[in-house]
Image (cartoon, rainbow, N blue to C red; front, side):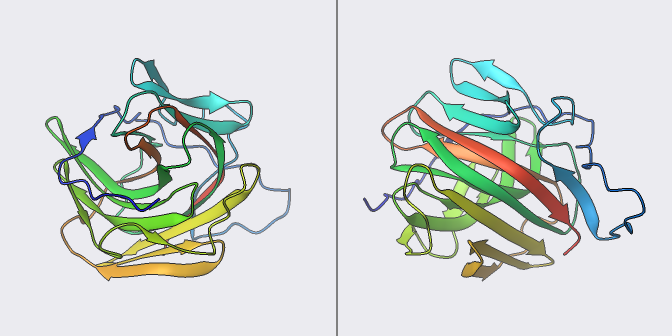
Length: 220
């Protein structure tokens, strides 16, 4: 079902933890990758990502994956590892777990807070085959490419399927790839640095739940 644009979005602010996400162990003798900033398969629950449970939902580790469940309509919940980067190429595997397929979930970069207001770039898909990308500046959302949610056949819709999401934030150029296929690219200079993260959100129906895994963050 096509999505209606949000002119004002109620955003839930989760405090980012100061600790950095731990990199996954590297086999003995393997060369270091100088571009690698973070790698996490969520097998350890102390790797530094946000953990939260409340009336709005849950953001936490869950049996070797990262889990976001949103229990109220028309809000986002997200988790971040506590980085501050000017440029980042972030990727993750995402799998629908429960709730309405008219949902949204994906990646964020350059997340910052100013008082109680949040700002970030977002790159999301839905379980019924749509995608969108854009920015939130002090809680005000703008879609940038496309101008609202748009259908794409590259998004896997079966409940058991996993979608591989990748976003690059480099200078003023922001891009989004799903399952190896480029879907969106735009230019914007409003946000210059901040954290990366994982996000899930609802529209009119609450209860969406998403599992994330195999997060990798590199220098772009």
